[in-house]
Length: 556
Image 1 (cartoon, one colour):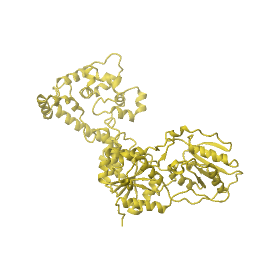
Image 2: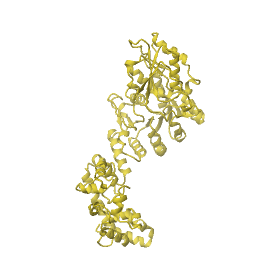
Image 3: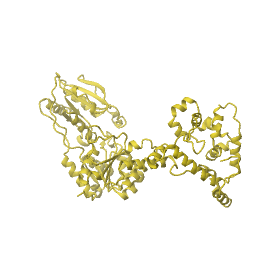
Image 4: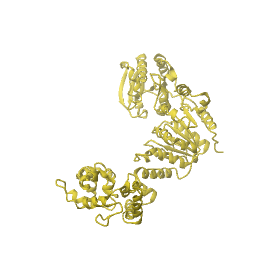
C-alpha cells in the first residue's frame, strides 16, 4: 500500500495514522534498528490488526522493537515473527535484534520464513512448492485482494454498505489481515499437511480395520496392539489393516506386524502440531472409511472420541481396549481411563478389558445395567509363556532379580518380605524411573526396612536392560494391569519368573510372602516355573466373540 496515495475505502483515520507513522523520525533512545526495519514495515497493517497501538498513539516501529516482537506481533502480512524466531532462535538472540531486524540485516531474502509452523511441509509435500514459490504466490494473491479492498470496486461496495449498516464497517480494518487458503492459520496448515502425510503413510488406500495404538511399543514385548493386529490381519487380510500410532516415538521393526499391514506414525508426524490433533485424527479415521476402529491404550483416541465421537460412530464401529485398571487402597478404581467410561459408553460398540475381574469391577463401579453387559468384553492380556529352565550359574548363592518403579508401595514391600523369608538368597533390586503420579495413592503405605540380603543396584530404563549375568531368576510382584507386557519382556530375557499379584482385584488380601518364597525356592530345586497366562486359543476365541458381537465378517 502506498500510505501517501489516495485515501483507501476503509477511511481517512487509518490512512492518516499510517501516513503519520511512516513519516515519524526515530524516537530518541531507540537503536539504529529502527531505521533498518522501517522500510519493511506495513504501517496500515500493523495499526489495523493491533488497534491498541493506534488508541495509545504509539509509534508502530518503536512498539515492535520494544514490545511487539516479544509479543509475537507481525510487522507485515508476509513476515511471521514467532515462526522466524523459532527457526533462527540462536542467531536472533546472538544478534540482539528483533526477528525482523535479523532478517533485514541478513540481506532480506525473498522468503524470510514460513508464515506458519508446517507451511514449508505443506508446500513441499502437498502443493509441490518450495518456500520462495509459496511466498511469491501468497504475496501476489494478498496484494491483489488488498488492492481491491483499498481502491477497487470491492472496497467501494463495502464502504457504501457501511453507510446503510454501520456494523458492516466495524471490522473493516481487520480486512487487511485477510487469511488466504491454504495459509489461513496455523491449525489449518498443520491439519492439512498432517492429514496428507498420514494418508501417504497409509498408501492412499482405505482400510477395513484401523487399530489406534497409544503407548510407545516396547522392544521385546508383544502388547495389546501386537496381539490385536496379528489376529485381525489373519482374519481380514493384512492389506486391510492399518495401525495408527498416536505416541512418539514409533519405530516399527520390519517383522513387528504381518507383512502388508500399514503403519501410520501419527505421533511422530504431529510433534509440531500444537492444536487440533484430535480433529486431524478424526479426519484421518473418516477418510480411511473403516468398518472397525479399535483403540488400544491411546489417550489421544479417547480425547478424540470426546470431541468427535458422534461423527466417528456414524461411520464405523468403535471398540476400545482399555489399559488395565486396579482398585486403589481407598477403594476406588485407579488409572487414567475410567473417567472416560461414562463419556464414551453409549458411543462405542464395545469396551474391552484384560481380565474378568476388571469387567466385574466396571459393572459394579459404574452400575452398568444387565442389558448393557454384552458391550463389555475380555481380551486375555497375553499368550502362554514357556516354562524357562534355570540357567547355569557359578554364583555361590541363588540370585533373584526384581525391578519396578521407585514407589513405597505393596509391590516393593512384598519383595522385601520375600527376601526376609529367604536369607540364604541374594536379591538384586533395580528401579525404573517414572510412575510417581500413578502411585500417589500408595504414599499411605510405609515401606519395610531393607533386608540385608537386598542390594540396590540403581536405575535401568526398562526390563530389557537387566544385566542377565547377575540374576538367575526374576521375582514379579506387579499389579495385574502392569503384567501383560511385563511377562513377555521377561520371557524374552530367558529367566524363570515367579509372579504374585498385589492387585486387590486378584488377590483380595495381602499376598503371602511365605508361599511366594516357597515358589521361588522351587526354581532352585529343579522345577521350572512360568508366569500364569492365557493361551493364544483363548485370545482368538475372545476376539472372535467380539467380532461376532460387532457383526464383523472376516475375509473369505
